[in-house]
Image (cartoon, rainbow, N blue to C red; front, top):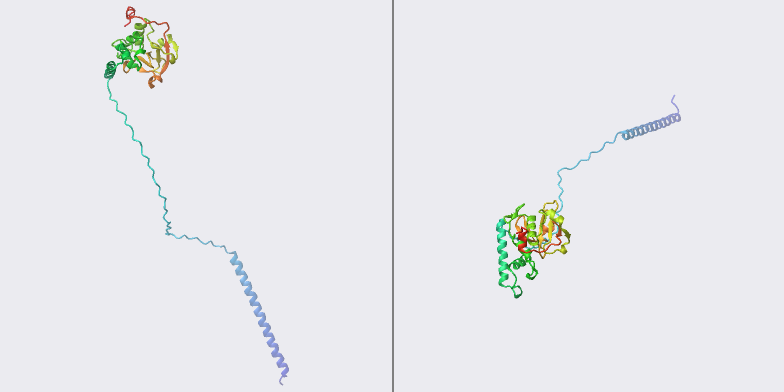
Length: 278
């Protein structure tokens, strides 16, 4: 016997419904599995360490800069004044120097005598000579006794410890002149001559006063006799008995002081000779 057509149709519908449900369940399970797989992959990717990318430099690249232009400078040059050449002093011996100075002084005296005015016609050659040496007027030189005493030694060479015309030192020269001009026996050495003299200012200097210097750095070691116009006569180590200027750098830097021997009187040559002075 055959089933009824209604039952057959119902069973066919049930099969279709069951197939549809089965397909839906199957699709749902695949989607869940796929989402789970994607989630696990993301967690693994986030857990993996991040690798640092190496920075690579590009070699062999030359960077050229634009040429730098410097501003032009204008050089200002100043002309130097031409240097004056100092005249070369010829070297000469002490004796030759002394002779040349004497010849020069004698020539100046001769010229003065040849062209002398009326007011100096009565002046002696000694006065004329020392007016030239001292650069002063003839009428200012009235102490001929002192001039004669110093002139006897003028040009004598220096000799340490000497008291003769063959050689004399500074204190021996002063000692001899004071005997000849004043009849006074001074101490023999310059330090003692400084001690016995009365100290005066350079503004008080007169003819015959003594002036003292330190040339060795150990107190008074040099002495001379003041004449006039800041000039003094002394026995120089280098040039013998000569006239020098007190304000020459060498002497002004070594100047110690000035001294005066009080109560000195001019004496005649005869009186000086009687006392052993020449």
